[in-house]
Amino acid sequence: MRNFNLSKAIFPNTFTSLNALCGFLAIIFISQNQFDIGIYLIFAAAICDATDGIIARLVGTSSKFGVELDSLSDIISFGAAPCFLIYQTFLIDYGIIGMLASSSLLIFGSYRLARFNIQLDDYETKKEFSGLPIPTAALTLVAFTYNFQNSVKYGNLQFYVLVFLIISLSLLMVSKIKYDSLPNVFQMGNRVRIISIIILVAALVLTWISKGDIIFYILVSIILFGIFKNIFYNLFKNKNSETIKLKQELN
Image (cartoon, rainbow, N blue to C red; front, top):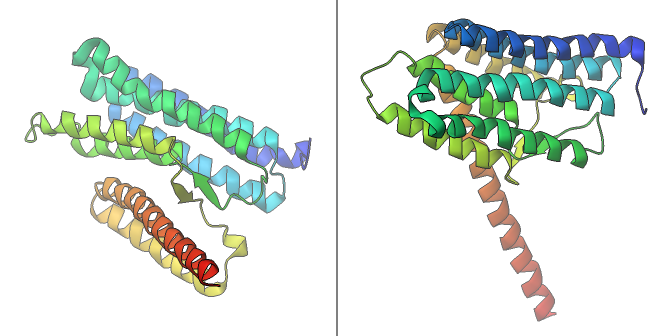
């Protein structure tokens, strides 16, 4: 198996396994109606998911095995756990409709992960993703739940917004919209690294000040930025193609 070193792979694979463990524990706590603990565990799974990739690059053990293990863990932590969370908090009273609606993230996320695995050629340089990554989609729904699970002032608006989010995030995962992967800090220039650190610190400070409420809006902003960037890229690409075609016709 290419670039697979068992002794070195223990370190990133440990964090991948912790990702799956956090997802499983989240399901247990959610089933006991301890929703806040479940939410914290899903976010902990996301931290483990990001950490395993960083460590894999650091020790040079990126491999097909790691990619497959990561996807299996993701489907637990960012598929099953968030789906169960939104079902228990918002959709449990809607019967079969609630079950089907809440399962969308799991179904489309599974398709998204399978497509990613068969399209990935280079395990070490994942510069962008085709479609919204399942952790981003899952964390957006989890953050929405964190913000609004105990709010009654919005009435039925919460339900409609949630359904819109589920449908939109599910479709974005299987779309061809390009989303950037996490930047590789080891390949950054000093200036880019400093800017990235400043942005990260600012996000952490805002998260602390807002007691976590801003996370949902940060994630929505990231998702919208990817959509608009893709639109502008396609418009620019089409404009260039038309210009080149016109020049060829004139010549």
